[in-house]
Length: 310
Image (cartoon, rainbow, N blue to C red; front, side):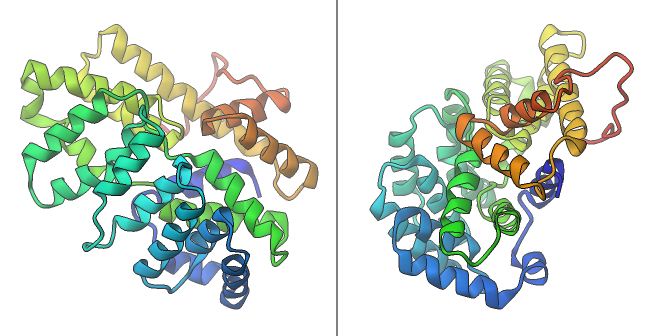
């Protein structure tokens, strides 16, 4: 299994993945056994892993497991983020207290308002959407704790000895891409069309794009780039900087396909080490390339085979 394959998997699943694909891909009995053992372990990471890997359970049951995990580690921002995402599909779940705790644990993270902006957009509450977007734009970055969640969840699964490291990692990333990656739709809708003709709002959207580009996943970074493409003139330095970041991300994603095989125990261990060392997915990919002796920047003759996407 190549590292870029897992990266592509997360990108394909973002915002739309559910249990169906993973029910077909994974052995249900093995997963059920894993989840039971994780619940029995009863520590924060094991309960969070049980919530993430639960297949066929009602959303409320997954949320209950995450709430129990947070009780054991109440200031862990990555667990609060998962709890927030488990709350999102449940209409009766009030996301506000979770968002407040996440903001307190990680004040610079715009993702703390992800559910509020989504729900406000879905009910057509433009006033709340705009207020939340302004709060996001005043933040530093949009992090979903991707590296931390992969590392902590996979380690928890490995401790119950039902899966080998490669299988555990593949399952964890597959389920996390369905559970932990937010819907970006409402954020994007706020920064398009006629709204951008108002100077103050245009400035807000430009700040928001920068916050997203500082996020800890390629998905978030590229979403920020897509907003940059709407809010900056093509001949501006800001537009060109964003275009360069987009090209760099695409190059690294393509180049990483051949550098690391998770079927190799040594490479797999190195991947776990990189997850522990770096905040962002982007940094991990760059480090993998350098480990393999591959330039982390594109050569002049590089061809972008991903052209046409955002």
